[in-house]
Length: 252
Image (cartoon, rainbow, N blue to C red; front, side):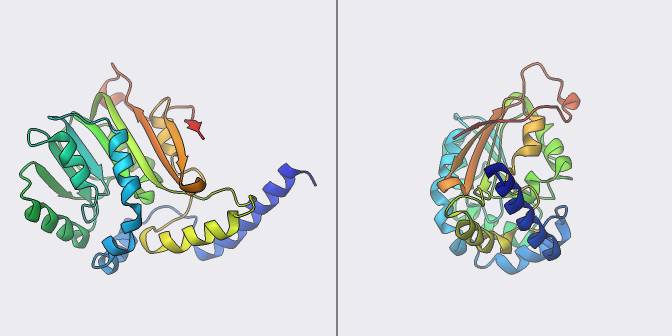
């Protein structure tokens, strides 16, 4: 059996292992609310190691003072300092999350910092309603959002033409590489408390790539993470932005 056949067999074995665990279904917002009710008190401590990647994702948005940026799946507000600092007092940060318990933590952060330009919205990404015409959109550590075409279509439709989008999070590294299996077991353990599905975890950006032509994806953290960036095409009518053909360009 050739290398391609071995890789296919390994991927098939992994899929067979994960399917009985219910990890390949669609995202479940109700289950996510239950998860984050449990995780809210310790979320920041458990995810502190991701701080450099959060700041790198904020850098990729290329924000300037005065802009409006939306943080979808903002959770306890760990991205808010990076975003607020870049848009300044004259800009606006909108945080969206479906978990009231995580948003309670985010509100405490906003109050402590004295930010008057940060707005928090309790809603799922599929149902979130906020002002149209945002300049930039961040989806960070929100795999469930990335695997919901309905959620992505809703939030992207609220960007202005030419608005930028950045997504960042964890992913599987290739299982057939020498350290693939142990790295992915560690990735699974680290992410299991925070996602309701591992469907699409090899390429979490695949749905976004059909909606944002020319999406560029950089693999980071030894292949266990990614930062994807792109922009809504100029001149595209806002309500006409629907699923497109074609995938992203991956930069390794």
